[in-house]
Image (tube, rainbow, N blue to C red; front, top):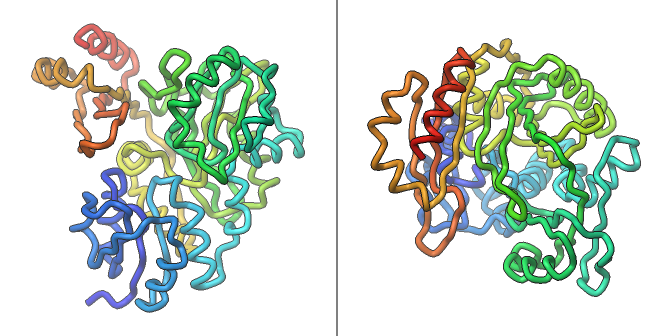
Length: 379
């Protein structure tokens, strides 16, 4: 019988692996705003409560004698998770800092104050206060994840048009952030900082985004081998965490390099989403990364093995590609580098750019590149 009880916020498709790992040792109580999330059968108890209702969740946690609250690969729930843990056992040192880490405007002010490279930015919470001369600019909600509500505007008239389409992502108390667009290739780094303050990078990915004005992730080449970029990223992260005064955490950093400097695009204290952290990174470091998350939440020491040379290509597809992929599935499955094709379960009422992904894997980058070209021709 499992006596120790833990709460899990978020029971979506990309949290399943972590939920299963946790349920092996603990009695799990899940919370999700969806009345029938995909992970409902993987927890011992379920409550259909919106994650913003933190006091209501806290009441249940205390009643059920929850010892810890966890989440997997989701930025949206982090503030609530850290707040709840601080209330339950008063041991979470990150709680006071998560408010500005998850607020893009506050984080950019932190970069500026501590003399890190940063894109020029301007934030406001009232459209009457907008600086019409700041454009062209990337527009972002100050609080948000998954590129929701993010778009690029050449001028103020374009902003007015696109803002009306994305208005729901900018509801009070979120500020609107205008940010200089940094040219160049975008990268992502996923890893951990341990209890001793040492930064460990599990993998660096090279990202491809959609053409402006949208800024969707189209594909990633994961675990690229570039010693220069890795060294530069490690140096940046070590200094960054020293200033943040944070240890014992996973991280997900998105950045560009311009004039030999790293410009932070996005940052969070979580593992990468869309199975990148739980599945792909586990393959790269040769151990269960969800267990590392669990160890971190329970303040246990963890060790990370050296990353291997496995390389992955993750291609997201939208509605326009679904039928073509289904028609050519047998051809794709014959690739030497073929790993899997996943079609996401999307609610009928919701629209989602990402309706699934194709995953290729090969240690030989030359073979992988050839098969990426073949895949693009098929699609």
